[in-house]
Image 1 (cartoon, rainbow, N blue to C red):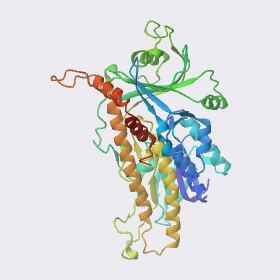
Image 2 (cartoon, rainbow, N blue to C red):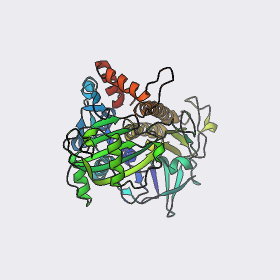
Image 3 (tube, rainbow, N blue to C red):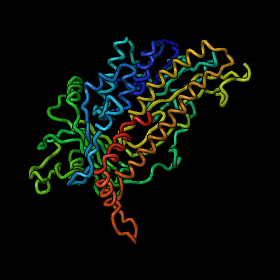
Image 4 (cartoon, one colour):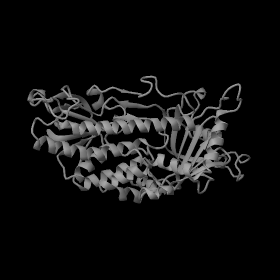
Length: 463
């Protein structure tokens, strides 16, 4: 690993890898990528890549390889436990994009594809390299010394924090990270306040579609994963026979905390309580009269849903960041401090509802590559009186706006999908969940409502 570089990318998840590939697409190679964990692409995590993200990946030559390994979902069925409420037809997007679908592909497979492409360029991800601190370089105030836990130091002009929700880069840069609406209080309590996700293999169930199930007490999803995921697991020494499904459920807070490692029995109880009856392990409930049971757990996780956004996605470490005018008054106002930029979960987190998180992070990264190249060129070619930092400020402000839009979207989606089974009022003694189901059923009959739902999910209106 070199002692210095122009750009240091901290984090080799989808956002960090996409940042590197975006820089390479623009012909820039003077960067280093580091990651804290010894091996990448460990678990499936995020699952869906939407049209806006595929278009962004197309611009850096990465879209086709990802599409080839995923499964195209052209409709999403939203149901109650026994019947369909609405089916969102994504083909209405064909007027706006060459990707009129949602692509189902696990995050570790996306990382594998992006990482493999990076290797073809001769780029190595240095692991494990855990950042311990950042400090202004003693030799040049416009550079940052990045100190790792093993004592190694890399000096960089630009440090990209792509190191996740617990970002060390963000913390060391002194950038706050709170809910944009409620500060430290977090999101409103819904049936999705705590969730469990798992990749499982069923026995007894065949050809299960992409299903989202709403019930008065919770929310449940079941998504078939592409066979390429089985291939990736086999390549890593984990042979799995049969179709793998991603399941997820909100767990009511009255049930207590979700177990750290949810068992097969625990997950099955959630399927039987909140999933569609076609997945019930009780033959007397299952309309096919055949029980469907979880045969194998590949991976499982638990989490609390909350939202947060970095106060800013661009700053100068320990220096002066000129605000306002694009032209400095004189050379005495020249900014000092190495440049810090945040992308992906380091810049924003929110509920997984709608599968927007990884998508927003990848788009951050693709667009950052273009902004960085413009800033590098402006810094070297323009007179010192010109404030080149306006390029990065504009990028950061635009991504901040997009993140706020996505957070608002996912919060609203959370409120709808996680509607609690409470009476609206004593004057109108009907369950809010029942009203929600009626409204969705009626809205699903209207073509323009379906088109709006597809547009909102695609991200095309908030790239």
